[in-house]
Length: 615
Image 1 (tube, rainbow, N blue to C red):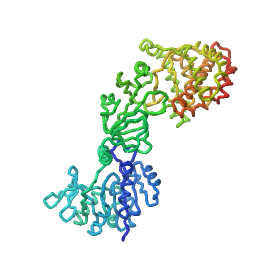
Image 2: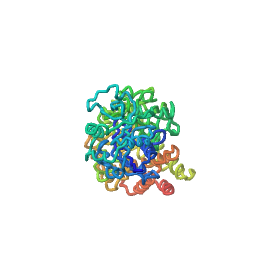
Image 3: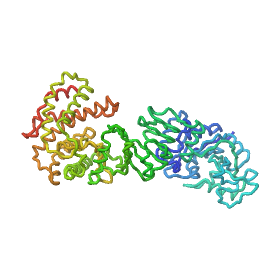
Image 4: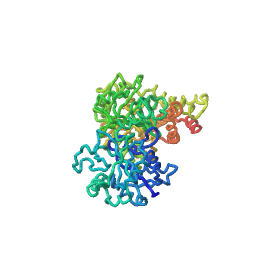
């Protein structure tokens, strides 16, 4: 018997399924655990198509990787389309491959059907038609006219043929058989199959025939239809595979590597790696604020991960509109403080996100999306811009410490806490408990001699002028949007030592700055403050302040990494310990070389000895 080859159409943009198809090409969406592409391959193989070509344009690399992972990958040929060629142009793009067979079977990569392609192929061979299209009765779409003898007389009303008692209006399934010489009718470049078929119907009546399929067929081109297909196959309330731990899901499709934060509840959603696409926000727990703000489906949700707090941050994306939904725990003592401080800073032009709406009963806030360009990601991607980026951030900090402080009467909440003796000692005890003991396993009985050094360090920090302190002014909490420096995680602001935020930025273990750039930026900060009417400082006093503050900050950071990594189970934080340890050791060794200043930290030999044992 003559050879048959198959073409699976997988290049389309899947616009009706957006935003789902922004991440996954439509033919790679699974239905009850098997992708549409693989289902099409099974259908074609059952009809004797041993060799298959798949065209790809949108997210083509994903299609290529999927085919390569198949155990029978050698059967497949990938026809990449740098420019999308359309349903007709796909035949031209794969012409060399398809011309090696007497008959071709084309199968749309977004349909689900129980059609036996072998029956379609047999009918095609027996009729001698140039093209045989599989048709179904789908009244809401029916636009292909088929006469009593099986000949197709019109498509989409293009020829103006009026239906009568001898014709039947049906829908083209996207599955069809063609003789090899049909390829001669396909022009080079982009084209649509319907136009080619219309020309053929006019030139050669009877050359295009229909094969009526009365079984199951579904076009899964929309999210509603995609979910409905799973409901039909798996039943109401389905979850397509084992849900992530501690989540509540109802009628949800889980893609490969699906993952969600624990406690997440979703209904009628397609779930990927910390993202989901929902048909509507209605009945989605905790998203009432977004509904009130006008967000409806289809909608993409992205959980923002990697931060150290227990708050949850969810990016809402609907077309060109985006926002961030912050979900705090009911017991979060910082919720109201966040609202007050963030609003104050935004109104003063100091870089926080705009607050769109908030619900104190549900502890949720809908706010401006500042994007994904953190200082950390920008510096790592563009190391040659490090000096400029960090300099712009220090300008923002200088504004915060001067103009923000001047307006203290407008927001009492920002000053109702103090970076006082108790807090300074808490930081160094945190270092001892969570890092030296909890992470490094040192014996706490051997660390009591650190108290004298910790106390003296706290006293030196308390001598510094007090300003408004962010308290966690590091690269992951600083973003750049439209060229402007923006700030997040501001609820911890308080009165504190002048140098603390500066060293939080310049001795940040997430972004280990070049020592030359660090020193240059460090010594430039007093002039930034003075230019805005702030403190006038000598270089000796400033270096003493920054050394003391850097010791405090780096010990706090090491304590936090130990706590988050070992207690909270966020092991990624442990990777920053080596850098933080090196920076702390360097700063401890600098103490003896400082010029005389009332702000100088004490010598800390016992702390240095403990650190060396720990790292």
